[in-house]
Amino acid sequence: MKNIKRFLSGICVCSLLTSLTGCYDLEQLPHDSVVIDFNDSQKAYETMVGVYQALNGSSVYNGFYALESATDLGWSYNGWWPAYDKYNISMGIANASYGGFSETWSGLYEGISRANNMIANMGKSNLDESIRIQYIAESRFIRGLLYSNLLNYFGGVPIYDETFTGDASEMLNPRNTAEEVREFVLNDLTFAIENLPKTRSSVGQASQGAAYALRGKVYLYNKEYEKAKADFLQVVNGGYGYTLHSSYADLFRPSGYENGADDCNEIIFAVEHMGGSSTPYGLHVQFLGNRASYGGCINANVASQELVAMYDCIDGKPYNRDDFFKGISDEDLYQSQFDENGQKVVSYPPAVDKLKAMYEQRDPRMAATVILPYTTYKGWVYNAAADCEMVLSNDGVYHSNEGNGYVRNAFNHDAYLWRKFVQEYDWGSQIADRGNSPVNWPIIRYADVLLMLAECYNQTNDQSNAVIYINQVRSRVGMPGLNSGPAWLAANSQDEVFERIKHERAVEFALEGLRFFDLRRWGELVEKTNGMKETDIMGKLIGGTKTIDEKYNLWPIPQSEIDLNDKLIQNTGW
Image 1: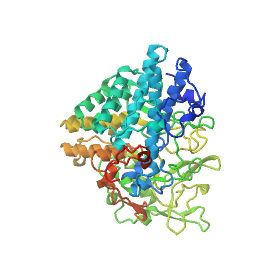
Image 2: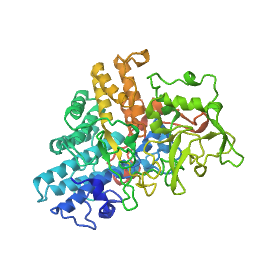
Image 3: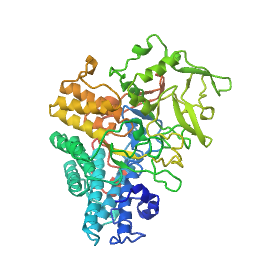
Image 4: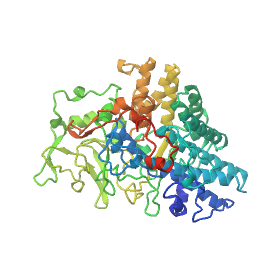
């Protein structure tokens, strides 16, 4: 298959798929206004690209980062943009009519409709059999991925496959059970494994290795550890060429910008993005970046104090403030004074050098994930590159301004801002607006497979092998291996190793949207989030308190769907 990015730069897929950009419709794509000749290889290919493009829909994977605010790792400031923040969920004020639930449901089903269309029409096409089978396998991979997401969000949902020929008004099936949906997903992924090529033209193309990784994840989420282990071992030992990239930070920078590696061999499957003015198929970062970011972003999503405290010291010892700053106040660590015009810092905190030195003694993933006080961020101000410093002040006025060379929080809070995925300068002229960043969105990374494999080994009482795979991930960023000397690195029992896996997944995948599902499947969502208070870097209360109870372990069936189909039974508590 051709490189998807090259194809997107040549045609307007949005116009090709105009008839599906509103409500999802499980009827064939897109014959309301365009008749597709599936015997034409180019038209068939274009439609296949349209199936992939559904993954970039808002509330599908574009905005997936917002799930972090419904965990212990992040916060959203308000609930104005349901696809890109999850404030209403984290605050416990969402109900079944909340747009974040309905947008997720409809976005996933629209992608399924595109996949169904491709599967049905390839079955009737007179194209070469190898092409037909490959397109069917790719479509079934994507369909399996999307139904898996529906299962994880909502539990059992109605199954519509390629045999459904009605329109949206005829989608009146009752919910299938979770077991039936899972079996449907596994069948799709097994077909994909048997028929997808081992190699791929880009990280955005489904491949056999990606199908094994996803099937293993489905098994893991259902606690079928031996089956999951077998699939993950196939990913590791199957000759696919996956490796951990040497630089963690570069994984979240676009290829073509400095050492950007969002298309490297660690990325097993991703949503491919482009951000140029003529290729608006990008990652929406308006609510992720800060005011100093390209386009002047509105950081509705920020990192939590709890996340930053999770990053261990470089020797593997858990971080303890007193080990670095005993007897030093937060004011002496963080608070600067500006001049009378609020333009320039005239006095930095007395202990700022100690603060910077501490950063060097922490897990490198911390600095790659969040913008730390008194570090530099590569902003874009007045249409030019601008190195901006993150500064905190305490004179009653928020002076930090990008026009004066400082990072600015759009909501005037001294909170930790995200660095991961956020644009640096103009990404080497690869970004034209804040709604379309060129950074690919990783759905499955090799590091994820290694840690899921470690979890399988641990759950089947093989702690020795579990530690081997955990240590591979730690080694990439220079963190010492477990059981390599000091007592604080010891992990021998099943419970001890499990705690290490949970910790490693939190700091490795922060902002990638995995924490929400991890906490739910471990039964820890309520424990880790309910009652969290939003504080700034110095512990000052700046927001509300998270209120997440057991009903959030499954999202509600959107009320708008129940209104259309009274066979849909609501989840408990909603």
